[in-house]
Length: 324
Length: 296
Image (cartoon, one colour):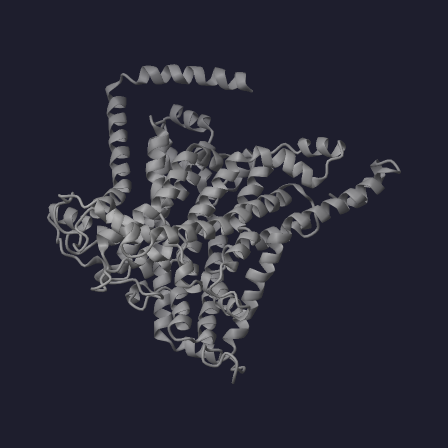
């Protein structure tokens, strides 16, 4: 990698060729990357800065062109005193704390079952995965039919088992309904990733453990979990990101007709992303919406830092020995 | 290496065959298959339930016998043309999905190759930045994006979809980078000695060997854009809307109530194309995830 070292071993002609080769490679790298790089500047970097500038202004749909001025931290102070904003953050936190473990348990469970040398593996894998392919609108309406108060499948099953059979899931338990949908609709992706991870664990480890008389639980705790911990870390981080962006499902799962921007979403399902967007598309207040979005980013950075830091304690780093 | 694998698996197989006859193993296997069948039923049940309910009388809710009789398969015809022209919005969906998916897969493959194979100043920093973009929440990007799009006169046009397409997807770039990292780098050196430039190396050596990764990329991004709801509902006027938004509004034209069975019929018709693509590419998809090393 270090160019300074090359002349010592190279002949006189080589450094020149190396230098031009390096230059061509750099040129090719940035050429190949240019569409994404432009997108990165236009679609990620500039919006972040713009959102910050907006949050310091009184920009609304009313004063788009006139009377637009700097208002300092007014929007942030307003957010600090906004109970609904804090409630949306609390709900987002609760969603993350419930859906991430639920996803990981489901994904790992399904992957371990699929890894047990089954017949018709492709069939089972497809059946567990198929929900991921269903578009979100179809997912939501299927779910509405499933949890319907009068005659939904869930209430029918609960009734047959002797529980109450007239729960209004959409209105009274919106987050539980959402959690069920999220597990059903998105577990398949992580399942495939865990399955690939399980395939990467050498069989000999299990053989040796079995010879040593380790029980199935012991083999799971001492071999499977540590060797999968980098995959689990990946799934935790990805799950947090997915949970942070859950708001289309709540809009579509709102009781009654679908309203654009979910003015009928129960307050338990108004997560911070949706709350920020509602301030813009219901109230027309760009400045306040952007301030809430930035506050959300701040919390997400805190959470990610916490997760990555905790990784030192539980992610097994010996994995590098197996390559990748 | 192949020989080593063969000699190792032979005794294992013999041991398994002997095991199959023990009652304990038979019980364990039966239990395992019961579990798999049960779980598969749980995962498929919502779809089946959706299908059953798409066959009820169109003004009825989901009450009544689980499988409606008589079955009103006419709901599918009504969803196709009774309330809005399904084919018009289907065409919109196809256009938007194509605009956002095809360029994105191409630019992501190029970028993935660059991250995997080309050494340049700033590469690792840019890679971290790229992964970082996937963690930016939706609202903070969309709020200014909406403002700028409106200012540039691209509101209620399809331009944003093409722009997203050309910019590529960080997730796909990561996928292609992982995939191309597994290619032997001697390939590049040999090609370079023969005088091939990086564009030719990529187009003639890497791209033709990317079927598995391309299948994963197309399915993931394509199904995502096919069902996309939020961008379309906020940026497009009715005549340009994709089905992902339109299907949510199967109103009874007179009573202004949602016709649940018709909505389900429309939603299932809308689900059919990605479902077919998935089952056609299913084997490639599973292999792609293993070979792209997505495991971390």
